[in-house]
Image 1 (cartoon, each protein chain N blue to C red):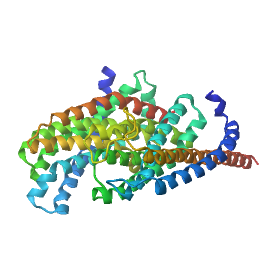
Image 2: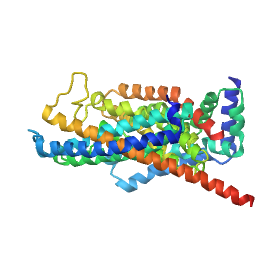
Image 3: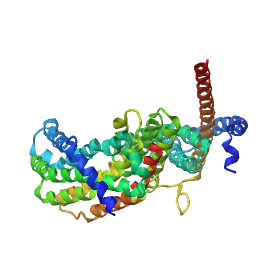
Image 4: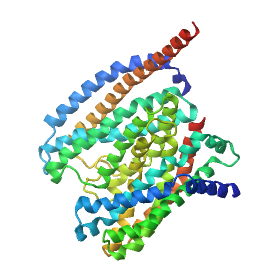
Length: 221
Length: 244
């Protein structure tokens, strides 16, 4: 358990010290969303109608950005091989790295989302639900993304390939994440959407560390 | 049993025997199926003549799912028992399955225009089928993305197994969600609810697509085996030159 927390701490420290990756991710998220009013026109009604969708899509793309580095830097400097050799099960190591990824990407996105919702003139009834849905949905994104990040280790054009592999698998999270927010704004119950989002998260929590660990193992073999 | 066919030479000998049979079966079954579907079978009382698109649309959708399931099983066999032929079968199946998925989406949208008034709707069945096409394309991109072919095979095998979650979603999407796409009328517990005059050409076409798949798959596996041999010969040649 101590090792588990140590790996999370190590990844967090690395993320804070080198690069400012997580700042870039949030900046990308904000800029991508800000482009939409220019693209579709600034009418408040239109923006309010599509606000939840825009924020979710931008969040998907933003979390894609940092996924590539989830295993890549460790793979290149060789520390991934040491992690594979360590006595702790690789599945736990992968899970620790995913948690660190979520803390440096998912969490800042959630914090930035209400600001963007204001900019897009979203109905205030949806604000809490937007945060709740992102909180339930972004861990699934990190978990599913970890599988893709491990699969493209050592490949040519890893970044583009990663988006081709992972974005189709993000679709269910997107559908129910947007559905929950739109339901609340439309005056309906969002319970079913939230339950499915939670189910997706638990399902990927149970399955993705295994698949990602298998992919890491074959990459460093 | 499994390892009997791990030997490529033995497999190629078997493939030599099966392949012409599959070719002839495809020609005959597809000829009969197309004749019955396009000429003999009646027009639908609601859909008119465009119902005939179904004789291509439904078998290609079945085959897209069938190919993916076959790929997943081969990939699992390849990962678990390091069975070289299973990997080759998975790799050879991918482009065929992708073509079936594309054909299914294409014929579906051509049928949708006169029937639903639109080429495309974002309902669960169509969306999950589109995701299946993306999974096929992702697999094909990943397997080619490594300098070392065995790395590509193993990474893409894991990807196929992850994508299996989509298969039951496609199959049951019409039952779980209230979709514009009509629910299943052939493969269901209470037996087919489709008239025999339409069921027969449909089943003939489905058989024809299956034999077509096996035929093309065998050709592709032979090509892969040949490509592996060429690669090995090249390596040997390069090594020989290095020593001189």
